[in-house]
Image (tube, rainbow, N blue to C red; front, side, top):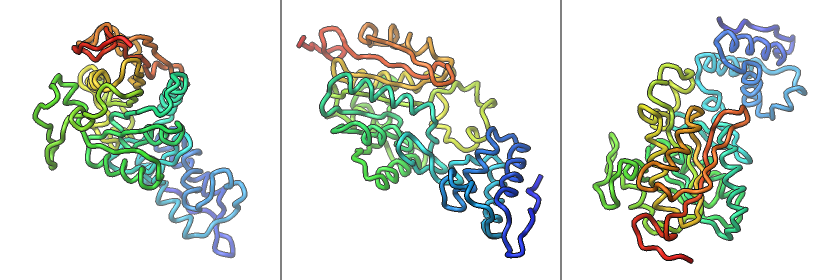
Length: 338
């Protein structure tokens, strides 16, 4: 189904209302979840106006109509809307996205909201924050934007995502320190100093504790949206996800917990006693992830105030916890009470 041509005015223009109606019908026929909304956002992008001002536009040029129709056809082919506009709105920021990086989702904004609330409640004056599996940098940049005096570090492994992360740090001008490191080196149970990981087509990549060695035991907040989808979901995800989000940002192994396990293990090394973990997870992990913190791995008995939180749709979405190992030292160390 192609978009039919709409009426052309004597001045060589077409009505925006007609174009939007045709675009919405095309997207609905293609199975797009929000056809009218996507059509309006594409039109706003083409016309370089806010979506709210579209109501003030009656006619558009034939060249603008052709550009809009081209984008609508790509969206009907299930190319993500954000890839077509080049931006994803996230809290107070516009995050640049495209092929090779995970598109930040609205539910992750609530992860950041809770992280900021907990940080402020902790009374930390210049908190050290680490975003593991940072992707586009949406979480790290929001922390730098909204938490006064925060020292924010963003850790990403994949080269393509790392490029987008650095681009967003540059375009926003926010003070985020970018590191390439492999969180999974720690998650695989390898100690600091193990041989670095390697990526296809790239050189060796150090583990997160090698890269952030100076932060071990000093971090106030570790926040993460790790890959957490179980492998059995591969055939069930929407085309926008399966075809366009990078696999490394999606899949968390047979049970979906490989990424969360890696983050929890790294967080246990990075956090100071009393430090905070805020981590997103799959909606089916509302019991598994809190149980992982409560009784899994060498950190058993070191996580407290473990709370799972729903998203706006009521689905289990992220966990918060406080790191407080016995003796108020790091695991296996002879930390002293303070």
